[in-house]
Amino acid sequence: MIDTVLLLVNISLSVLLLRGFWQEMDGNGKIQVGGDFGGTGPTFPTKIVKFAADETFVPVNTTEFFEPHTLERWNTMMPAGTGWGDKNPETTFFTTSMTHQLHCVFMMARIYSALTANMIEKLPSDYHTHYLHCVDYLRQGIQCSADLAMEPHEQTDPDDNGPLDGSWNGHHVCKDYSHVIPYLEEQIHDGVRMVLPIDD
Image (cartoon, rainbow, N blue to C red):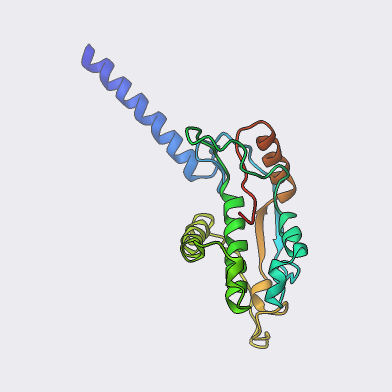
């Protein structure tokens, strides 16, 4: 009798585990790509986005990367309320990967700009390790999201990496950013997470 009960419990638990596994595998589970692994966050709506070159984020004159207007432009992608908050060393705080990735791209561009413009004094003392950290962090972020959008290239595409380069021709399935920012702002307001400044 006890063997039969144990066998039924074992089968039931196995079915439940497999059901949960397949829900995640077939996309019907709660976990959204780029979401929290615990599945506690919302499922954001998506939209199709065609990337476009924008020199207001990446000025050709690298010294402009240290001008307030460039920092202001980058801050338009960040939620309101960024900052360190409580710096108690005994307090665990949570930030978010998306804003960490934006910070890394910004810092890599700023480091590159300082080195090419001979403005190294504007960089933090740890710029070398910061740069390498960001390369490794972004590598893993790209692998995680694995954007498989097809980017059509023509043989006649300009070879200058500018606005007419074929890499801008893809259409990407993206989270609707207009829903992401208010969610993060609510999380910051409620003290659930902290978002560090893009230039820190």
